[in-house]
Length: 457
Image (cartoon, rainbow, N blue to C red; front, side, top):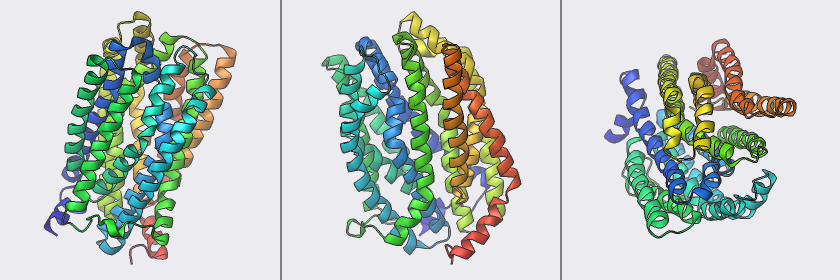
């Protein structure tokens, strides 16, 4: 019980609680991004002909896994609210239902991912020169995709109850393992691009296993008991209510990004495709503080609203949004000035470096907008309003982005439009988010909804 109280985000100094919870999430995301980037760097140096297939993998991976990551976020909101309200019986039902969902979803993703990946790659007009490498990489990656689903489920549970440190420790170990396996499989043994995917799958599996061991062996109220893993109908519907909007949002955004990738592939230039792919890996590092504060805010808001600490929730929201925006912009400035150097870490090809660095100069200074949108979205998800970020992001980052880009490229076929469309749609979404944030009394409205639905009785 002492451990449980120590991890609660409903007590103590707000800034300290939020920062100390967000920091391990940031470091976890950092190491995860490092081992994702390791695939690209090592493949770029040892298998340069396969660089484009690996560097452009992010959108397809996010399409297949993003939905289940969104579901994990929704489950985390439910768990964090019960944890904050000290309704431990309901919390345990939510945890075991969440794990049951993850087991089924993970197997389905692996099966359908392997079957659909080649088909989707062809829909994207993937150039024939890189198609064999792409199919080879994704066949192995999605064969073990269930490990990624389970990892996100287990981490979501631990973070929902305030434990963001252990997932960090596990991820540090698996990140080092991934880099070591990449170097061994690709650099020493000289195996193909499939080996880079295998290294990622093995590392993700180790992370998931370590989280699982923690959950089944701990003595806290959130302990996972194998005999209790089952679908609780009422709890599953609640998890779906919170998780589906985030899952649908991730999937549709991924589909929109695949349309963008199709436009990128239409240039039929490996230098452009590789340059955009390498930039995406660099942008992933800028995305780290954005992700960590968005996730931390969701848990912080969820726990404090569950405990009816409404003013604390408001203060934490303001502080978390501010931190996310400032840190993201600092990173953006660094990438703006150091873009050429960062892209050169992936390849020595001057054309790839020039294309990647150009994208850095166009987008990096607008990371503050991306941070603002995600932070406010995290607040609304924690407040039990996942439909708000879903509709805003789908409208601006999917519909508007795809239509605008399609029209612009039909007028002038210039890759610059691909670079510009992202900060432009970030800015438009921020206008909507700020208007909704300041016009809706999301805290007290939650109180009324909760009383009506009996969620905190």
